[in-house]
Structure formats: structure tokens, C-alpha cells
Length: 109
Image 1 (tube, rainbow, N blue to C red):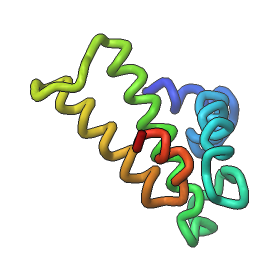
Image 2: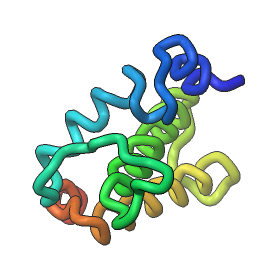
Image 3: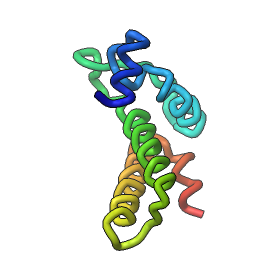
């Protein structure tokens, strides 16, 4: 059982993203996004237009990058460094394509 799943059980939350683990990430992502409403936690059959998927993906990838960098990995062509580069590219793609463009401008400079 993973950490996020354990926290969701302890806090009685259905999606893992509604726990205290991800709320600081969503609070930091929303001011840089171009979406009118903050993360709402919609999932399942109510999840029609995919509004909440971008903050989830970005928050999850940022957490992954934090752990990989804390493990002393640097971007390179070797395995750990290559995976770091792939995750970083993937989160940048989500930032630039899904309405988080103000956050993406920081990466363009």
C-alpha cells in the first residue's frame, strides 16, 4: 500500500488527490493556471470535460521529480537521469497544453 493510498484511507477521502498530500500542490498550481476555477476533486461519472486532470498530472509529476532529485539524480542519458528528463518533459507538455501557460512561461526563459 502506497503512502498516498494510506493517507486517503486515514483521512476518509475517495480520490488520493483530495488528501493533504496534494492540496499544497494544487494551491500553488492554480494561481499560475488560466483556468477559472481551482481544483474541485471531480472524478468518476461526473468527470466529463477533464478540467481536473491537468492539475492532478502536474502535481503527481512534481512529487515524482522531487523524490528523484532528492535521490541525487541529475538529467543525463543514463537510466535515472533519462527517466528524470522524461518526467520533466511530460509535465512541461501538460503545463503547456492544458491551460497552465503562465507556469510554462517560467520554463521558456
